[in-house]
Image (cartoon, rainbow, N blue to C red):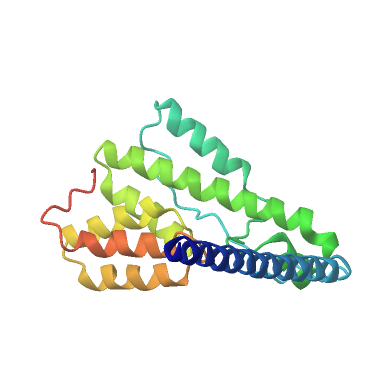
Length: 211
C-alpha cells in the first residue's frame, strides 16, 4: 500500500514538473516568436537607403579560358560566368532578409537578394570549374579560382579542403594557417564543421588534392 502511494505521488510530481517544463518552453518560444515579429515589423518600416557604395565583387579578368575548350561542362560554366559580367554581385551569406531590410530598407530587398544569388552562382561555377581543371591535371590554374572564393568569404567547404590539401602538399604552411584564419571570417552555420575538417587534414599522411 505504501509503495503504491509513493508511486502515485512520484507520478503526480513528475506530471506536474512535465507540465511546468512544457509551459516554460512554450513561453520561451512565444517570446522568441514575438521578438521576431517585432523585429520584422520594424524592418518593414525602414525606408530605402543607398546601396551604391557597397563593395561589390568583381569577376577576375584573367581566367583559364584557353584550357579544355572542347569540354561542354567548361563551356557552360564560362557562359554562366560571362552572363554575370556587368551585374552586381554581393556576398550576403548569413544575413536574413530581416537583417537586410533593417540595414538597407525594405525597397532594396529584391535587388539585394538578386545580387546575393549572383554571388552564389559565381562561386559555385568557380568551384566546379576548379574541380574539372584539377581532374585534368591543371592544378596551377585551378588554385586561383579556389583562392578567389576564399578571398570573397565563400562558404563552400570543399573549396577550403582542396586548398588545404594543396598547401600542405606543397609545404606552404603559412598559407594553410591563413586559410584557417579565413574560415573564421565566413558567415555560415557550417563554419565550425569546415574549420574542423580542414584542421584534421594536417593530421593525415596523404594530401592528395584529387581525393
